[in-house]
Amino acid sequence: MPTLDDILENVGEFDRFQKQTFFVLCLLSAAFTPVYVGVVFFGFIPEHRCFSPGVAELSQRCGWSLEEQLNHTVPEWGGHGGDFSSRCRRYEVDWNATGISCTDPLGSLVGNRSTVPLGPCRDGWVYDSPGTSLVTEFNLVCEDSWKLDLFQSAVNAGFFIGSINIGYIADRFGRKFCLLNTILANIVCGILLVFVPTYLWIVILRFLQGLVSKGCWTAGYILVTEVVGPKYRRTVGILYQTAFSVGLLVFDAIAYAIPHWRWLQLTVTLPSCFFLLYYWCLPESPRWLISQGKNDKAMKIISDMAKKNQKKMPSHFEDINFEEEDGGKQSPSFIDLVRTPQMRKNTFILMYNWFTSSVLYQGLIMHMGIAAGNMYLDFLYSALVEFPAAFIIIVTIDRVGRRYPWAVANLVAGAACLVTALIPEDIHWLKVIAACIGRMGITMAFEMVCFVNTELYPTYIRNLGVMVCSSLCDVGGVIVPFIVYRLVEIWHDLPLIVFTVLGLFAGGLVLLLPETKGRVLPETVEDVENFHGAPKAKKIYLHVQTSEVAHD
Image 1 (cartoon, rainbow, N blue to C red):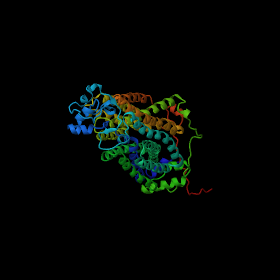
Image 2 (cartoon, rainbow, N blue to C red):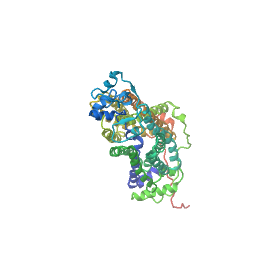
Image 3 (cartoon, one colour):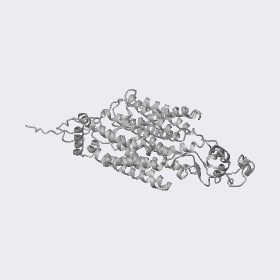
Image 4 (cartoon, one colour):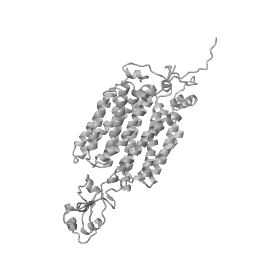
């Protein structure tokens, strides 16, 4: 009796129909980039200092250069990487007073420079930036710098809540319905972000955008892997994630061309309107339709698939039914994730690795955004290394296995973070190279945890296991802005030391997981506990009805 995958082999596993679906969904994956890492450009933190009334006029009268002006009027000025005093405090003197010396202005005002009182930036800040960002528009610096952390944490909190709810919608109402509605909601939130005038509304809309956008990306991932044959499923999943890397390059180029955050937000949102055309050019998942008993609709899509792939659909397939070899069904339970020793070990290690992957991936991007070099070039270099990361995964997972490449990826990421922290600031090019190696390592680890997670849980609890473990990814995303933006105030490379510890520990834990290369997916908890066995494969059968009439 043929299976659903047998039918895909007959009508085409990855031919014209699937390639078209794959291409249009890859556009969706690439468009997720501004939501996930947009804080790098939307929340860019330029060099800044307190605005002091009268300084500009005094500088003009004395004929100072900008550097001379800063040395005379800004506390402890030291150029890039200045401390809290130079960015968040100003001299409490009247720069409009008469008789100020051009050679020693502070000395002429108070006598002893070391006794000049310092005060907060009551009149705002001066930013050394040709464009605008959330930081420059709402003065998210000094005492209010935590509000930038909250901006990024809000979208990750939305990811955390939305991934559960959107996942339910995709399972209950279909992948296509979920995609179209989350695309529309994402467009509305993205456009409103351009026009709302207050920081509070921006955070609220950012949360709502997170609520729908990750679920939208995940629904696309599920759909693209459900319409291809089993031989292509893992490769297509990895390439779908690689499309996100392409989105990083495009986003970087657009941000370079448009350095004003509201115009940038509008530019990256409007193209998403074309995704609403998916209503006409995307199919529903045949697997989902079968699971809902909508066999006629599933057969119509399979027939369309065969026609577009120029394959002949066997005429004797008239109906599709589930016929499960296992007699009973097990109900998933959270307790099952930790009830037995191997399941418990798998769950805790996977949760930690999801958390670590998110913290290191987002953290390295954020840290690079506030480094001393060219933000756009550094972002470009770190995005480019994601492509060899995907290639290495495709080449190694079916040859070497999952466990060792995954562990090495985490260890390399952690070690690279340590090396980056120890390289002096004046050798910036070497710091960038080390950081890019770390980015490549954590990209590999992030992509591998996505599919290994599904291979370590039995069928009846697989979706629940992935949902629970991957939720730690969003928890990491909520925490990482505070790790990066707060710790850099103590020491610029201190976040990298935290990333080192997390990455090395994650690499060691991965070695405790069983290897899943060449293994049949487990069906029961017993299969997981005895992973070296070969559990019987569960199949979805197609019930074949023929037009022949049996004669006595």
